[in-house]
Image (cartoon, rainbow, N blue to C red; front, side, top):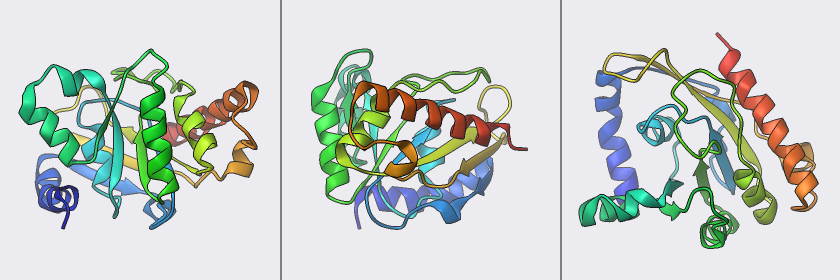
Length: 199
């Protein structure tokens, strides 16, 4: 059993004790095959919340500062869980290549397209990177959202909601041209904002 699967299984009951978790739309999660899982980003615990209901390993893009500024143990832990670094606000070709390789091998990549935590409830506005990765790998996108009131804390009600899968034809991603990527990012924003508005 991989470190990822071991810790996911071990942390599930702890998560349910610490937070009032509710998972919706889990029937939309593909059990196999390439998929880019895209969600809004409310807290540092979001990868944990997103991973719990997904019965397969998610390789998360994580900001490079986590690998560089928090010591050897944190770096080891991130790599053990399958995360890989991305340099925010820069054209990071290496992280894109890594994500595309994972997807072409049939894996799942987790991306928070806002690029940072957005603590308020402002509308979801994605950067184009996640859509670009999907276009290059010819992989569908699974829109998701993490919803809770205020700041995250123990006993908080946390809802993790998954939408319907967005295949390449629905995203109009016949190629990774700038216009196609921008239009697909707009559709992704529409889908995730729709999930956030559900009660």
